[in-house]
Amino acid sequence: MTFEITRMREDEIDDWNKVSWDAFAAAEDNLATLLYPGGLTERTQAYMRKKTRDSLSDSSYSYVFVRESSSKQVLAVACWYFQTKDLSMQEVVDKEDKARKERAEQEPIPGINFGAISEFREAQARSKQEILGGRAHALLKVLATLPAAQRKGAGAAGLIWGLQQADELGLPAYLEASGMGRPLYAKHGFNEVCELPLNTSKHGHSHKCTHWCMLRAAKVR
Image (cartoon, rainbow, N blue to C red; front, side, top):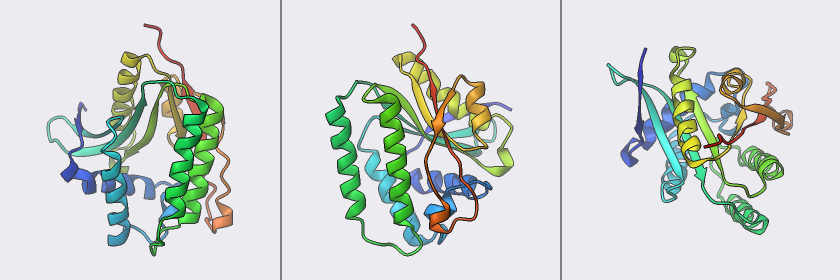
């Protein structure tokens, strides 16, 4: 099976989010049903749509589809973020303070667990700051493969696409891996740094959603 990568257009945001949801919600150790316990309702879709659309104003984000080359069927999606310049620690702190303020001002939406979302984002920010500081890097924010297409190379295609961009920019790559994705990332040069500290049981989640912070060194050009 061969694949092609296409960048997401603004009118494809809902399609991208639907693939991401279908992929993550089907996994046993998923966080999707913890963060969005009400499922993919219209209000949840509207929230996701706005968050995705807002991020498109930042050219550092790349949202892509992985398609089967002949049929053009979407099999996976990915979101990469490329920070091409080092930031001072003050800039890192200011950036997270802004994100924290936005989360605090978010109006409640039925079916969305903003308490869990905030705790997850805080854990991500702390771990990333401890590992990378303000160093320039490529961040794999999302890699999601539809259940029927898993173990066929579609997810790897989305991963390799981003790593090629990172290598061209001379950047290390960073991500938080689920148990399902961890072997794929290790195969492509990522090393485990630590476990992401997240207590899902306090939010009534029945599964332990362990994630691992992983880092791939920059390629020497």
